[in-house]
Length: 162
Image (cartoon, rainbow, N blue to C red; front, top):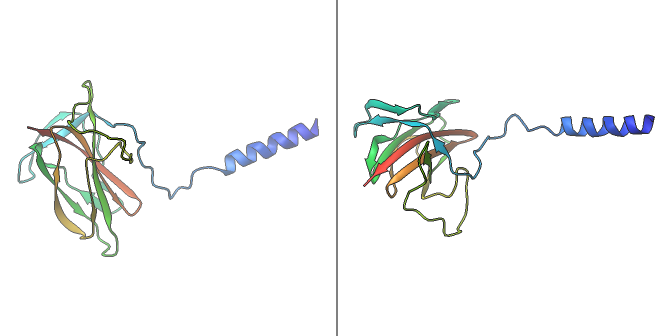
């Protein structure tokens, strides 16, 4: 009986001890993200409305990104990314998203190339300047913009029209 208890205690100790490290980045899965809303903005970046309930994270741990502008956009939108440590760099990528209650229709195809957090990217770039605006281009559809700075993940929602 004591052997069963001992083995059970070892298994429980092992399972509890193998928890996720607190410093790990919690990247989204490779599933297509569902966006529940977005901030409408002008070409100058001024917010002029909200559609639905936006599910986005624009500031965290000293890193920030603007809401995409304009939004909705015609093929091209901008996002301003800011971080304070000159030695840091960031990665920006754009994946198709589902607008809550609608089907995926982005005009993009996976072609079996590769998947990243949030699905397959239709746009991506490495960022080396700590405060700058970047153009984002894609076919018409709903998208999620991700920015990974060090171990901090920021994201926002973008709608691109024709």
